[in-house]
Amino acid sequence: MLAIRQGVRGSSGNTSTSPSLAGRRGNLIFQVGSYGYTLPAFSAQDPGDLPRDPGFDGTNTAIAAAPEKSKPYFPLAGSANDGWSNDDSATATCYCGTVQLAFSIQGPGLLSTSICHYTGCRKITASMFASNFSIADPYLTHVRGRDNLTTYSQSRTTTSGKLMTNYFCSTCGTLMYRLSEAYPGRSILRIGTVDDFNLHETKLKPKRETYVNNRVCWLSAVEGIQQIDSPSATR
Image (cartoon, rainbow, N blue to C red; front, top):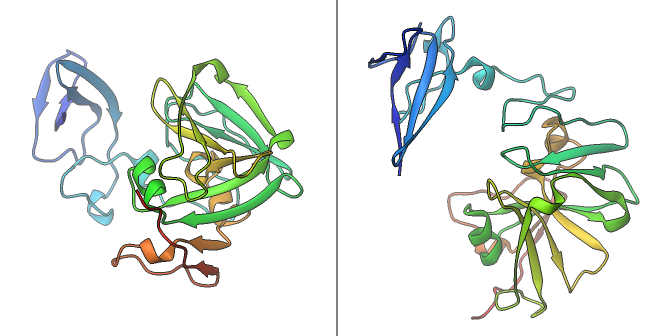
Protein backbone atom coordinates (compact mmCIF):
# COMPACT_ATOMS: atom_id res chain seq x y z
CA MET A 1 0.00 0.00 0.00
CA LEU A 2 1.33 3.42 -0.98
CA ALA A 3 1.12 6.23 1.53
CA ILE A 4 2.17 9.76 0.66
CA ARG A 5 3.01 12.02 3.56
CA GLN A 6 2.55 15.65 2.66
CA GLY A 7 5.77 16.65 4.29
CA VAL A 8 8.87 18.54 3.31
CA ARG A 9 12.29 17.37 4.38
CA GLY A 10 14.58 20.29 4.99
CA SER A 11 18.35 20.43 5.01
CA SER A 12 18.40 19.27 8.63
CA GLY A 13 16.72 16.01 7.62
CA ASN A 14 13.62 16.71 9.75
CA THR A 15 10.21 16.23 8.20
CA SER A 16 7.37 18.65 8.77
CA THR A 17 3.81 18.18 7.63
CA SER A 18 1.67 20.83 6.05
CA PRO A 19 -1.86 20.94 4.62
CA SER A 20 -0.34 22.34 1.43
CA LEU A 21 3.04 22.24 -0.26
CA ALA A 22 2.39 25.48 -2.12
CA GLY A 23 5.31 27.84 -1.81
CA ARG A 24 7.55 25.15 -0.33
CA ARG A 25 10.66 23.45 -1.67
CA GLY A 26 12.12 20.21 -0.46
CA ASN A 27 11.40 16.52 -0.82
CA LEU A 28 8.21 14.49 -0.89
CA ILE A 29 8.41 11.46 1.38
CA PHE A 30 6.76 8.33 -0.03
CA GLN A 31 6.09 5.36 2.24
CA VAL A 32 5.51 1.95 0.60
CA GLY A 33 5.09 -0.59 3.39
CA SER A 34 8.24 -0.38 5.46
CA TYR A 35 10.22 1.26 2.66
CA GLY A 36 10.55 5.01 2.23
CA TYR A 37 11.24 6.89 -0.99
CA THR A 38 12.14 10.54 -1.41
CA LEU A 39 11.34 12.58 -4.52
CA PRO A 40 12.00 16.28 -5.12
CA ALA A 41 9.02 18.57 -4.70
CA PHE A 42 8.73 21.92 -6.43
CA SER A 43 6.18 24.67 -6.06
CA ALA A 44 4.51 26.74 -8.74
CA GLN A 45 4.60 30.52 -8.50
CA ASP A 46 0.82 30.49 -8.49
CA PRO A 47 -0.32 26.96 -7.59
CA GLY A 48 -3.95 28.05 -7.57
CA ASP A 49 -3.83 28.30 -11.37
CA LEU A 50 -3.00 24.60 -11.73
CA PRO A 51 -5.51 21.72 -11.69
CA ARG A 52 -5.34 19.71 -8.49
CA ASP A 53 -5.87 16.07 -7.74
CA PRO A 54 -7.90 16.11 -4.51
CA GLY A 55 -5.88 13.14 -3.27
CA PHE A 56 -2.53 14.90 -3.67
CA ASP A 57 -1.73 18.47 -2.74
CA GLY A 58 1.86 18.74 -4.01
CA THR A 59 2.77 20.45 -7.28
CA ASN A 60 5.77 19.57 -9.42
CA THR A 61 6.13 22.23 -12.09
CA ALA A 62 8.29 19.93 -14.21
CA ILE A 63 5.18 17.78 -14.68
CA ALA A 64 2.42 20.39 -14.49
CA ALA A 65 3.84 22.83 -17.04
CA ALA A 66 1.74 23.07 -20.21
CA PRO A 67 3.59 21.28 -23.04
CA GLU A 68 4.43 22.76 -26.42
CA LYS A 69 2.76 20.14 -28.59
CA SER A 70 3.81 21.48 -31.98
CA LYS A 71 7.31 20.03 -31.69
CA PRO A 72 9.04 17.05 -30.04
CA TYR A 73 8.84 17.13 -26.26
CA PHE A 74 10.06 14.76 -23.59
CA PRO A 75 8.26 15.41 -20.29
CA LEU A 76 9.21 13.99 -16.93
CA ALA A 77 7.51 10.60 -17.22
CA GLY A 78 9.94 8.05 -15.83
CA SER A 79 13.42 7.58 -14.42
CA ALA A 80 15.30 7.82 -17.74
CA ASN A 81 15.81 11.05 -19.65
CA ASP A 82 17.74 9.89 -22.71
CA GLY A 83 14.87 9.25 -25.12
CA TRP A 84 15.13 10.73 -28.60
CA SER A 85 13.38 11.03 -31.95
CA ASN A 86 14.19 12.18 -35.47
CA ASP A 87 12.43 12.13 -38.83
CA ASP A 88 12.83 8.38 -39.20
CA SER A 89 13.08 6.76 -35.77
CA ALA A 90 12.30 7.16 -32.08
CA THR A 91 12.71 5.43 -28.73
CA ALA A 92 10.38 3.77 -26.23
CA THR A 93 11.58 3.33 -22.66
CA CYS A 94 10.19 1.51 -19.63
CA TYR A 95 9.21 3.37 -16.45
CA CYS A 96 12.47 2.67 -14.62
CA GLY A 97 14.66 3.25 -17.68
CA THR A 98 16.28 -0.19 -17.77
CA VAL A 99 14.74 -1.25 -21.09
CA GLN A 100 14.83 0.94 -24.19
CA LEU A 101 13.75 0.18 -27.76
CA ALA A 102 14.30 2.07 -31.00
CA PHE A 103 11.90 1.76 -33.93
CA SER A 104 10.86 3.26 -37.24
CA ILE A 105 8.13 5.91 -37.23
CA GLN A 106 7.32 5.68 -40.92
CA GLY A 107 6.66 3.00 -43.53
CA PRO A 108 7.55 0.30 -44.23
CA GLY A 109 8.57 -0.20 -40.58
CA LEU A 110 5.48 1.36 -38.98
CA LEU A 111 2.62 -1.00 -39.83
CA SER A 112 -0.39 0.21 -37.83
CA THR A 113 -1.65 2.30 -34.92
CA SER A 114 -4.83 1.57 -32.97
CA ILE A 115 -6.84 1.69 -29.78
CA CYS A 116 -8.10 -1.67 -28.53
CA HIS A 117 -10.97 -2.19 -26.08
CA TYR A 118 -10.66 -5.97 -26.08
CA THR A 119 -11.15 -7.54 -22.66
CA GLY A 120 -7.67 -9.04 -22.60
CA CYS A 121 -6.07 -5.69 -23.48
CA ARG A 122 -8.02 -4.06 -20.69
CA LYS A 123 -6.78 -6.59 -18.17
CA ILE A 124 -3.11 -6.62 -19.19
CA THR A 125 -2.86 -2.81 -19.22
CA ALA A 126 -4.83 -2.41 -15.96
CA SER A 127 -6.73 0.30 -17.82
CA MET A 128 -9.84 0.65 -19.97
CA PHE A 129 -8.11 0.21 -23.32
CA ALA A 130 -4.72 -0.31 -24.94
CA SER A 131 -3.06 2.15 -27.32
CA ASN A 132 -0.97 0.09 -29.72
CA PHE A 133 1.32 0.41 -32.70
CA SER A 134 2.89 -2.38 -34.71
CA ILE A 135 6.45 -2.41 -36.01
CA ALA A 136 7.89 -4.81 -38.57
CA ASP A 137 10.55 -6.81 -36.74
CA PRO A 138 13.53 -5.70 -38.89
CA TYR A 139 12.77 -2.10 -37.85
CA LEU A 140 12.79 -2.73 -34.09
CA THR A 141 16.04 -2.58 -32.10
CA HIS A 142 16.75 -3.34 -28.45
CA VAL A 143 18.91 -0.39 -27.37
CA ARG A 144 19.41 -1.79 -23.88
CA GLY A 145 17.88 -4.07 -21.29
CA ARG A 146 16.91 -7.02 -23.45
CA ASP A 147 18.23 -9.39 -20.80
CA ASN A 148 16.00 -7.61 -18.26
CA LEU A 149 12.80 -8.56 -20.08
CA THR A 150 10.57 -11.27 -18.67
CA THR A 151 7.79 -12.97 -20.62
CA TYR A 152 4.29 -14.27 -20.06
CA SER A 153 2.55 -16.30 -22.76
CA GLN A 154 -0.97 -17.65 -23.08
CA SER A 155 -3.62 -18.39 -25.71
CA ARG A 156 -6.75 -18.79 -23.59
CA THR A 157 -8.05 -15.24 -24.09
CA THR A 158 -6.77 -14.51 -27.61
CA THR A 159 -9.48 -14.33 -30.27
CA SER A 160 -7.30 -16.27 -32.72
CA GLY A 161 -6.64 -19.04 -30.21
CA LYS A 162 -2.93 -18.65 -30.93
CA LEU A 163 -0.19 -17.88 -28.44
CA MET A 164 0.48 -14.27 -27.43
CA THR A 165 3.78 -13.56 -25.64
CA ASN A 166 4.13 -10.40 -23.56
CA TYR A 167 7.51 -8.81 -22.81
CA PHE A 168 7.75 -6.88 -19.54
CA CYS A 169 10.59 -5.05 -17.81
CA SER A 170 11.34 -7.33 -14.87
CA THR A 171 12.26 -4.32 -12.71
CA CYS A 172 9.29 -1.95 -13.09
CA GLY A 173 6.76 -4.16 -14.88
CA THR A 174 6.24 -1.99 -17.96
CA LEU A 175 4.76 -3.94 -20.86
CA MET A 176 7.12 -3.09 -23.74
CA TYR A 177 5.71 -5.21 -26.56
CA ARG A 178 3.74 -8.32 -27.49
CA LEU A 179 4.37 -11.02 -30.09
CA SER A 180 1.46 -12.99 -31.52
CA GLU A 181 1.66 -16.25 -33.44
CA ALA A 182 -1.33 -14.92 -35.38
CA TYR A 183 0.74 -11.98 -36.68
CA PRO A 184 4.28 -13.21 -37.34
CA GLY A 185 7.00 -10.75 -38.27
CA ARG A 186 5.71 -7.84 -36.22
CA SER A 187 5.94 -6.55 -32.65
CA ILE A 188 3.02 -4.79 -30.96
CA LEU A 189 4.24 -1.88 -28.82
CA ARG A 190 2.46 0.54 -26.49
CA ILE A 191 2.16 4.18 -27.53
CA GLY A 192 2.51 5.30 -23.91
CA THR A 193 6.07 3.98 -23.73
CA VAL A 194 7.26 6.28 -26.54
CA ASP A 195 9.52 8.99 -25.13
CA ASP A 196 8.62 11.81 -27.53
CA PHE A 197 5.07 12.71 -26.50
CA ASN A 198 4.58 14.72 -29.69
CA LEU A 199 4.51 11.41 -31.58
CA HIS A 200 1.51 10.27 -29.52
CA GLU A 201 -0.51 12.98 -31.25
CA THR A 202 1.06 12.90 -34.71
CA LYS A 203 2.70 9.91 -36.38
CA LEU A 204 1.47 7.41 -33.77
CA LYS A 205 -2.06 8.78 -33.45
CA PRO A 206 -4.41 5.77 -33.69
CA LYS A 207 -6.07 5.26 -37.06
CA ARG A 208 -8.66 2.77 -35.87
CA GLU A 209 -10.53 1.80 -32.70
CA THR A 210 -11.22 -1.91 -32.25
CA TYR A 211 -13.56 -3.99 -30.11
CA VAL A 212 -15.71 -0.92 -29.58
CA ASN A 213 -18.51 -3.16 -28.30
CA ASN A 214 -16.37 -3.53 -25.16
CA ARG A 215 -15.78 0.20 -24.72
CA VAL A 216 -16.95 1.44 -21.32
CA CYS A 217 -19.98 3.71 -21.36
CA TRP A 218 -18.11 6.74 -20.01
CA LEU A 219 -15.66 6.83 -22.95
CA SER A 220 -16.60 8.27 -26.34
CA ALA A 221 -15.48 7.14 -29.77
CA VAL A 222 -12.39 8.85 -31.14
CA GLU A 223 -13.54 11.17 -33.91
CA GLY A 224 -12.28 10.65 -37.42
CA ILE A 225 -10.89 7.12 -37.08
CA GLN A 226 -12.26 3.73 -38.12
CA GLN A 227 -14.56 2.03 -35.62
CA ILE A 228 -14.50 -1.78 -35.57
CA ASP A 229 -17.05 -3.78 -33.58
CA SER A 230 -15.54 -7.22 -32.94
CA PRO A 231 -16.78 -10.17 -30.89
CA SER A 232 -15.41 -10.77 -27.43
CA ALA A 233 -13.38 -13.86 -26.66
CA THR A 234 -15.20 -16.67 -24.93
CA ARG A 235 -13.66 -18.28 -21.88
